[in-house]
Amino acid sequence: MPRSTVARTRARASVLAALTVTALVATGQPATAAAPPAAEPLNRAFDRAAREYGVPRDLLAAVGYGESRLDGHAGLPSQANGYGVMHLASNPENRSLEKAAALTGEPAERLRRNTAANILGGAAVLRDHADRLGLDRAERRDVNAWYPAVARYSEAEGPAAALYADTVFTFLAQGLTATAPGGEQVRVPSRPVAPDKDEVSAAGVYAQSPDYPSGLWVPAYSGNFVVGRKATVDKVIIHTTQGSYAGSISWYQNPASKVSAHYTIRSSDGEVTQSVREKDTAWHAGSVNSSSVGIEHEGYVDNPAWYTEAMYRSSAALTQHLAARYSIPKNRSHIIGHSEAPGATHTDPGPNWDWNHYMQLIGGTPGTPGDSLTFPSYALQQSGSSGPQVTAVQQLLNAQGYAAGTADGIFGPTTKSATQAFQRARSLTADGAVGPKTWTALLSAGTTPALARGSSGDAVKRLQRSLTAALGTTVGVDGSFGPSTETAVRNYQTSRGLGVDGKVGPATWGALQAGR
Image 1 (tube, rainbow, N blue to C red):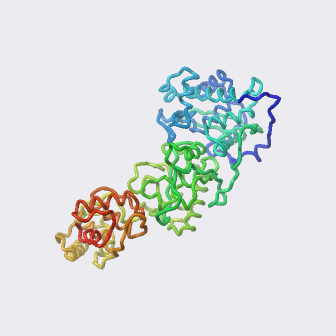
Image 2: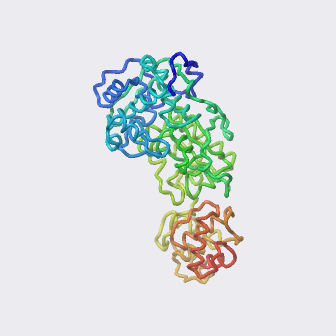
Image 3: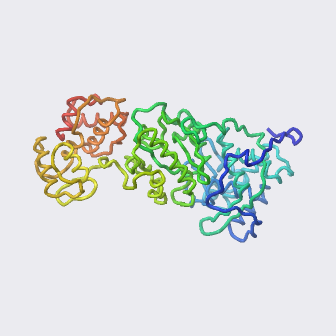
């Protein structure tokens, strides 16, 4: 509701005390000189939009930088279905794209893909928030009065909205020089700021993470994660948000998103916010949700500028903390990217993430991902084959007492002889080649405990791997016997003429270990 100037009580404090951001933007340097004449397209767009809608030019640029690093991503959407430099969004909780279209008269398609139109749309939405807050002409000239409008631009509430606005005002306080795709530079001079926060409830912004002392706590919507876990935590999953820090935290609070992460890390200074308790199962990596902690990193996989040293070091400190708490080995079998999780369809953190540097920071062992036995599918291995699946065959044979020699990934005579001995013991065709039946028998070998929905542990992982080999379709290997594993068991039982109950007892184990 509009407020009169007389009624407004300004609660302003030093930015160094009021803002949660304290570090310099890692991708730029403080800019103390006035911005150059806007001779280039992006600068012209910010100047034009600022004039047309009465929004301070530097505020508009700071919002765009925080949302996108001034990269429109060729009209492709973010995780929250936001578009362009100004991240005009179209989702059930944020209709800024539609609002911008109504305010500017620009079609939504142009707002998505044309940078100048997108910036104009962002300015229109900011001005609309300012008008609804009752800011008059004089107040609109004072950048500090825009804090509540910036918070509303986030379409978040409470702590997430305040985090968003604080980030923008820190960019104003610190100043920045940003290089956009194509090489154009956009400058925002540094200045003293004392934002008017009286319209924004910051309750809980400084609440401490319940599990990580140096982090903040902004909880996800209760319908976007599961209370408790069905498996032991044995890995950390590294993600990229495909969006901004505060925007991603807000997205976890959106009932329509159906996603969440335990932690999110800011690009500029490495600030950490926790949104799901470690004891609970966040929805971030499909089949390995229950056995992992998910860490999201602000940014986009195609832009390396987001992966700052401050972010790497902050994330590494968090991963070290998690590894110590859960006895997670600090290697690339247990510290993996989202793209490396079984059955993953995502590509993050992508080729710009420096795994060697990250593993060095956590004091871990560089190398290739995977637990050496888990693959999305199991291919035929025979004399002359080589690679990681041959290594897995050799490890499995040696573990069962069949001397395959050194697990060197080369399928030679010794490995063939050991394979034949194993096949004869299982009444399989002793051809020395490892196809679906031999894979199934090898992967399922071991103890045969009764398993059913709710079971967890290494025996469940053996089951999941052997079902992947037997059925020829990927079954997520997370050590948690959930609905997808039960479905796979039922499919296996049906196809093998077994009693179909979705549970794994002597008959099902026997069939698997016989290579059926």
